[in-house]
Image 1: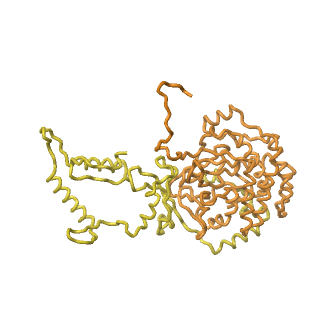
Image 2 (image 1 turned 180 degrees about the horizontal axis):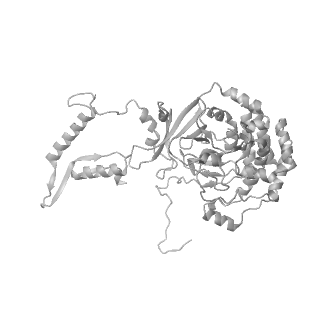
Image 3 (image 1 turned 120 degrees about the vertical axis):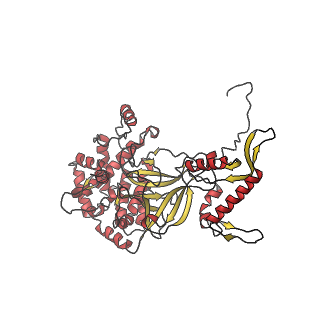
Length: 307
Length: 199
């Protein structure tokens, strides 16, 4: 304790400090230990009430496999200090998708996921695709396609399994970063891996009351993003919301008249069970209804390609 | 190539007209069809979220106004909810009890929507036009100023004070409006004055 001749103490009752100042963090990193378990549980909940129950149960099974393979996976090769410094200095994501190479940890992650996925019940086309990715040909090319968010129709199913494996790997990579060292890398781009969001969340956290966070479709990082602003082009003009009439209003399509796209916004402050990727798949009906309109889907979700 | 196509092209197609979805490629065409059938009776509703400034006081908290119906699309919009704007640096999503009840004042049946006058001796208010109202206010101010303006104090120093009238201007105004209001009011000699320019 500092000793000062006139030091005295008063009861700390500053009347101006009656609450904490709400300062949302810039980024919240994923915690792989419960990310996939939470996601799978949410998918199962949707499957209980959805006409697409078969598909939701399949995705839930795959996500449960993502969770199951976590114990004992080798540590991924993290970016070195120099790379992190350079990325921060130039406003680039520390996990560089363009320079990503399949290291031993990534190969093991993919192998184990494909083995675990084989136990999930799935239709013939999906099972055949899984067999092809387990055989391991063209793996590097498919990884590059997934990381550039550009999937060829001819082998879409194979790429979905690759994407599921990369989700595990990138969530583990992102979890090892320092959130305080992350910097904004561009509108609608993940500050960890530079990817597009799967959806955005309005949250109710101790230090973020009603703030909005975008959720990465690959590494599951959440990053703070101003509300009523397009998550793909950054425009604040011509933003509208479309929701299913008579619904609970917890998942809406945020539309932008500037770039003519939409990304879903989810009100986790109204429904605390919302998990962005699971709720994106669960609200497939909204995407189908949006197909009749002028807006194109700009979110990235390997389980909902083509909408 | 525009941004949407360059950055958001997720499905490359080589064959002409070949297009599909993850569900289709995985063999879940039935789930897809069932969902398509399920949504048929439902409709989409346009809603908006609009940033604005609370009208109550000079703190000028940011608010988000939720409405059903989109004016941009030629629909009638109805305000259904108002909350603090979490992105606004002043209030960071919080609102005082008055601000939190903003929606009720918007829809209040007792809300003052146009100038009302209760004439001397009358027991009720009647609606008047803005022209009549502004003329009456200007007349009353001019009469009061002519009667009570203090040009010099007891020592003979010029002070140009008008102490018998006060002026309270709106909070949700721009800097320019606040500047103009300040200039107009102060130039009359009025001292009891407050508006957004204070903060």
